[in-house]
Length: 299
Image (cartoon, rainbow, N blue to C red; front, side, top):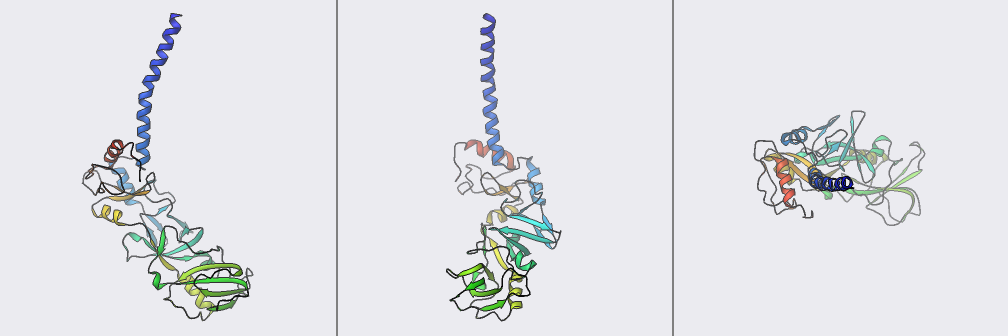
């Protein structure tokens, strides 16, 4: 009997001694989730600093991600794909676009020239992706005043709006018979398909002279800019850090080299860590900041 009681007591003591490591374990898990890379001080910095996407003539870094990029370096929803080692593709709101250029006039390659892949691969008679009103997800048109929105309408009945152009699709595959191009985004129309797309032509657009003119403009693409403020990343890089992405908090983060002081976010802004003015080393600083604010909910 005594033996049994002793065993039970031992079991209880075992549980309470297990409890402390478990709670520490959960704190650690929290911290690790907050620091996507949770590598050594310099490892995250060097990994993200050197991460580059290269495909054909396109080269890009933060904020983009791609196949094989280390976790915590790029934004998962800004995924670049490389097809046949030559063609860079990005999918935005379920439409596939070819990235024709990453424009150098903006720092950090956050402005893209993109064109619908279906209009590059086929022609304007065979759209692969229909859309209602075009959306560009995390991007917005650059200089919207330099772009004219046009809608391509396929096989319509009783079109009321005066078209900018009307083209026959015979000889261009058999998806549709006719295209009408109208300016802007028309209301309800009775057509088999519709695609609204901006073209780099200053509005107003009076008419579309030919099918080849239309195709050339569709394949030339248009310019979109990443909506998020790139200031955090610019400041981070200017002070010797490397930009990365905190998946748990869904925002840009700055990885620092081990020895130098580098940019640390102003404690009152959206980062939500307090009493941290500078970060000589990133991982311990973040862990400490997270630990002090354990009950604090992120904005």
